[in-house]
Length: 263
Ligand SMILES: Nc1nc2c(ncn2[C@@H]2O[C@H](COP(=O)(O)OP(=O)(O)OP(=O)(O)O)[C@@H](O)[C@H]2O)c(=O)[nH]1
Ligand SMILES: [Mg+2]
Image (cartoon, rainbow, N blue to C red; front, top):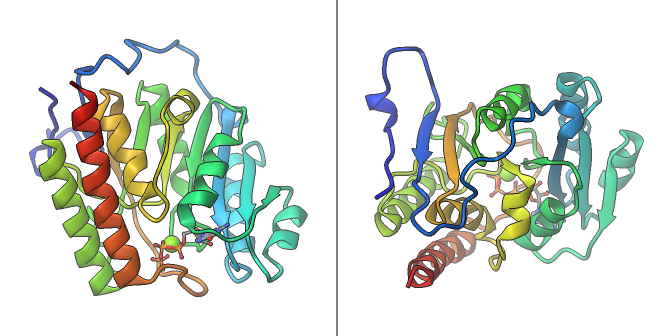
């Protein structure tokens, strides 16, 4: 059976991250990957961008500053504003796509890079790009997926309804998986490229939850990393009621599919 160390149970060595180290129950996860130490030259930061002209300059400047301009940036863009121009001015690769929802854009974004480590973020200045080195360190330490947990520090900048929804999604997924996870809907994660390439992704609004649940239920080394979460720049693209219902449905569907897959 898989195991997890809850944040409150952490040993007092100052370690912050939560190890959701599932054993390879289903035999999909590689036993051990190679010993290469990845650097920012091996990193792609990818995102869906949909009318984010208020935030994109800040987000891309942060990535450039933190990685010394060495990380590749991929934007899958459906905007009608200046977002794609600003992205190109910052040296990002822009893939144009009709707006079809979060997951359609982010699936394309995670599948595009050739580099071995892929980090997702939202293009709204909510996620701490300053933490990219820690996410890369965790991958170098052997993690297959490093998932930013916004709720650990309280996510005070998140609207209360969204915070309640995100806590509920995590509780639902934990129950269905038999593994305690704390933030299933975060937009900031690092993945070994093989993980995103080897799994088939089916969800749209619920893709973020799917990107955590399928690797975890297949025995990959998935770790939650507490992160700060900032107030959004620009308008949200998610309707909290409709989007929330879609995410709940995705969690139930994906958990059941992964359980059935084991037989
Ligand atoms: N290309 C593309 N990007 C999208 C689409 N929908 C959302 N996005 C992007 O996906 C990211 C996540 O969308 P958000 O509006 O931040 O959704 P959210 O994080 O659930 O909501 P907030 O809490 O308000 O930030 C943002 O960078 C959006 O610009 C879409 O249809 N097409
Ligand atoms: Mg967002």
